[in-house]
Image: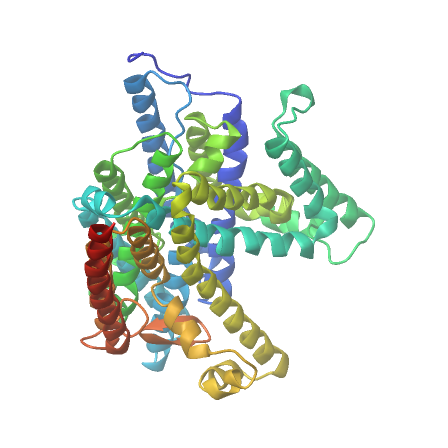
Length: 541
């Protein structure tokens, strides 16, 4: 009954914490690796500014969503309400590194800046991009509910399923089988715990047993000299030297420098605007996913918090937007409620404030805990089919294609980059990508792969929505979605663009995607014609 509030901490919150903390920790480790290896950021900048700023945003968001879950629990009198997960958007992370900050660094060096000065410029432009992305999502809070009402559930959930099965489940499955002696047992523990419902001794959650088993296996293999070792004592010692006190500090002058930089204009339209829109869609899809799992949250305040979180992160030194995380159904299935968000906030408060990211990553290998994230990807994919009417299953399946294609394009570019490294030629990947005929000769239509990948989140939603309405014989609505696709394609938000060794590059502008826009118009026109035949069929019957 209303007025009854669930306990803040429950047994499943420990499992949920392990999964969410590891998922967020992976993002932090990616930031460390990419920002030092690709952008040339110093460890001092990362530990002193970037990670504390990101962590504070993660902390505020997790506390807010835990509070929202408690309010929903009290309002509905339920004790099984799960907080929305919150963290750094993985897609935005890669986009901001390779398509915003790396070009900014190269442009600064071309203008005569030293590598250190260029890295500083890239960071400042990244702060500005994060700030603008937050503004876009904050603005989206005022239209979010309307978009949800107009979009079929199959369209929203299939987009998440495409991301989950490709960028999460498949990717972590590949890593699992690359390190079988460490990662396969944790995967077996996770599947046994959550598929078979087996309880383990001492009331220790299955996620904790999985992490402990994987970590123990990694250290045991290192002790007997197994190569390649995932952990080593010297790495722990080195990581310990980075431990210190790193409180988040306002960095408004650097944010202003990024906003006023002429380099930002080159990234604003092709990258920042699309990523801001994708964050809006991602938040809406995750809110819909939570509602399908039984927890209904209002879109407006949630999206406003996402936008404000990214704005705050940029003011404190982080160049990576934060948003509602994919995975609510998975955390709910784990038994997580409100406390896992609080535990995650505490973990990252300690991690960032004392510079422990390096240290934790050196003690607990990522392979020990990624089975939890893999399972989350599986659950999200399954939910897209389970939470929609059985008749809508084909629409969900159609919506998977663009995300899988985007993952395939990522594999293509990674493979070519690896070939370039092996051959000692940094131009190999670029020259090969510039020759579509070479791909066609082996049966791969690269232009089509690029076209379906560009703006894949929007494309997933459009085609799943059209399919959903066609299944229900709602031809006018299907034609309307075709019109949306035509507009987005015409201005280059989907399909138009190219590919570089760093990934897809948008070509946003008037008429840049006109061939696909014409295709959508033809589809919409046909849907309208089909509605006439459908009406006649109904009259004949």
